[in-house]
Amino acid sequence: MKILLTGANGFAGARIYAALHAAGYQVIPLVQQKAGLENETVIDFTDRDFTMQLNKLPPVDAVIHFAALVDFNASLKELFVPNVLATAELV
Image (tube, rainbow, N blue to C red):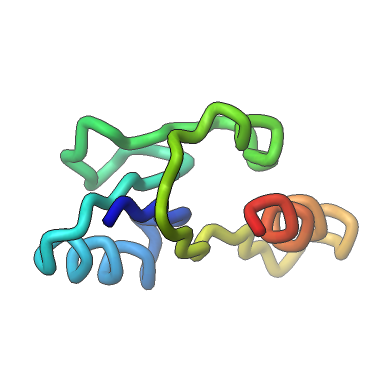
């Protein structure tokens, strides 16, 4: 089973990545920075709005979405695209 995991090098995502990988799943991490991941299929994006890159994603059997912008100083408008619109686009 091929799984796309967003936020794969974050606090929760890293643990989910490790557990899925150990269980034998093919995990494709979608991350903002490759730091901490040794997977050659890492999909790296630099724009916080990765919705513009969704058409470039490989076919997968499942998506686990753990990417989020956490910024206590951000406005609701700034948080909307990465946290709400990106989730809707992934669905």
